[in-house]
Every structure is written in structure tokens, then in C-alpha cells.
Length: 127
Image (cartoon, rainbow, N blue to C red; front, top):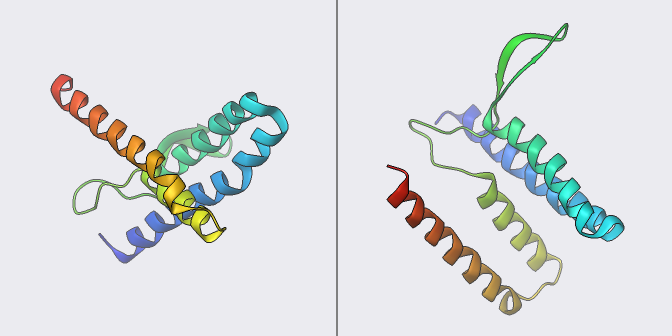
């Protein structure tokens, strides 16, 4: 992976963590579960388009489909997903803000078990 690819991948991962850390809680505080759903749609949807290469075409602005992607994936690049960035970033932010690692361990174990189970099922079914 080139140096530019490393920089854009780090930037894309940072931006999604920054957006989730700063905005999601405010939406939830103000609108409860509906706020979380709105934040998920706007934040994650927008950041997915930026990070994973949405093909967009805006008449008069961008004529035709333009691939926009910050996170580099594919040949000679590590597999990076926004979920890894969000999980690691929010976990680090929580610890930095005074959160307890011991209280987070059940959640981390549950997330890891769910990811492993989902990956196993996908490997069995997705061939």
C-alpha cells in the first residue's frame, strides 16, 4: 500500500470514529431510539459512501459516476472495515474519558463471539 493509501485509510477511519463519538450520543439524548436510528442512517451511511467508494453522479456537479473512497482495500492492502475502526476508537475514547475496562469486557467478548459466529456462518453459506 502506498503512503497516500495509508494516510487516506487512517483519515477515513478517524473521521467515522470522530463522527460517531461526537454526534451519536447527542442524537440519542435528544430523540432516544429514533435518534440512534437517524444517526445510524446519516452518519454510517455517509461515512460508508466516503470510505468504501460510492459511485455518485450529480448532474451539473459531477458528471457520471465518480469513485470516492478513503479506505484502501484490495490487493496489497489490509482488510479494514469501519466497524473495526469504530469499535477500537470508541473503546479507546471511553478509556481515555475515564471508563472502566473491566465493565467493557463482557461487551467486547459478546461482539467478538458474534463476529466469529457471523463469519463462520458466512463461510459456510457464502460459497
